[in-house]
Image (cartoon, rainbow, N blue to C red; front, side, top):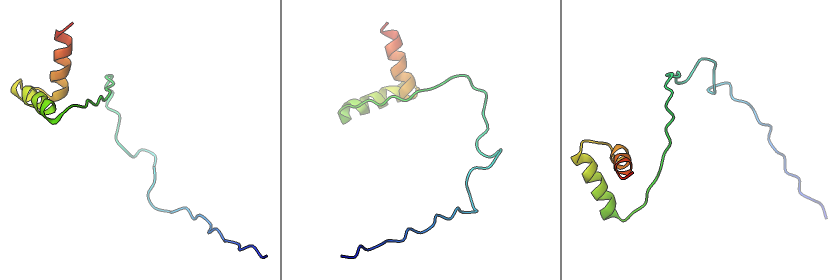
Length: 72
């Protein structure tokens, strides 16, 4: 039995795009480091949180963090 051979094409590096020195978003020097948190809940509860945050003119994150800090 003869085995079939498969030729693997040579990878050719593109001459376009890619990272270049000095490109990209510049650092702002901001020292704060933020993290993300995801919460799950029934749609009614999530809507209630959104409504309460809007009522207090706060983002959802600011509203929830404020509630947690108040309860300490």
